[in-house]
Length: 282
Image 1 (cartoon, helix red, strand yellow):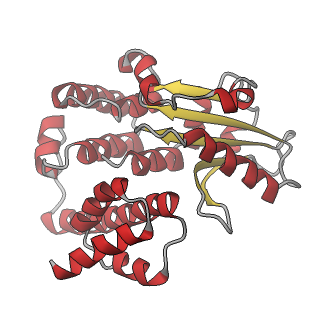
Image 2 (cartoon, rainbow, N blue to C red):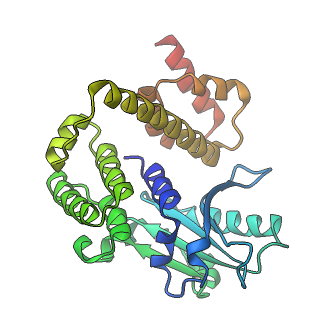
């Protein structure tokens, strides 16, 4: 499951969701704008930056990082990205706050000593989704986050049906669409029709309209997959040469997913070149 893509959709649709994880949200929380920001002249890309409105009394910028796999370099990268961003925008912002979202506490880097000053400063909140409690006791937005962390199909479907019922009661169409998207990402072996049936969704749109929508959604998925894979490659290998970028751009969504799995074993650009050459020979 590509959780980075899901959380991008969540924060883009509901930027206020981040502030449900913050003990003291800013008064202007509803006016913040969410962006995924690339820091120029580096291979850094910050998962989420929440920019305050221009009229905010205090210009506090919030940073979000979502982590669902073990990465011992996470804090090195997160704080490097954060402070480099502040350096580039030193005139604009006068304070910052970071939220790091882990699937579980076991995914946190083992050695936190070098960054203990920042982690214990009161400017960073670490969130462990599996410790937030029952999904049914949370606001809808946090419920969506918790849904991404459920691996068992039966449990995930039951949780999804609960969230759908709540969203339908509140006429939250965006929540309904995100629930179905999360389940589609989690169980890609199931067709959309199977997922709709399991969730109790009924669609009566004409087939032509439905197929047109699905085609557009598929194009969006391909674009999102390619963007995510390129981002992960940049983090792991640094700047990717244009010639290799062109080959990656030509990959199908299935081969992009294969590259997304394979890149975890890459350590140099030569590994990427070898993998792409294998694709050409195949």
